[in-house]
Length: 98
Image (cartoon, rainbow, N blue to C red; front, top):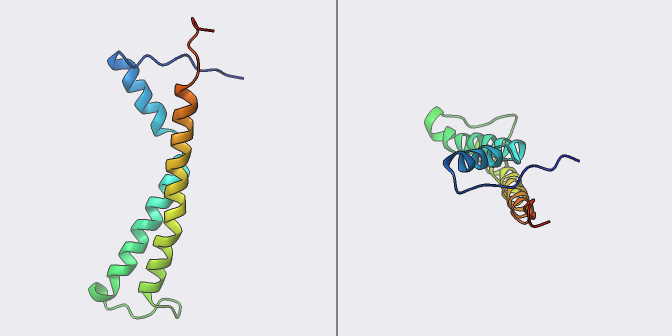
């Protein structure tokens, strides 16, 4: 299995590579969570702004609240996956210690 090289956070290039690596962890749950949160917020604010009273027989405020509640587990899962990845990556022994 591919074992990435140990981290060197003492250099600017190493820190930049670490930020890029962390951005790639749990992208889908975070992205879907943010989209659902944004859409839910817009639906929560839409009735007064656009005069919407019903979407598919449901109140836009209820739909928006449900979307925002659905976003919460995705955002939490993204944060937990990033934390688990960071802990696993940082706890690896360096090549000269093994």
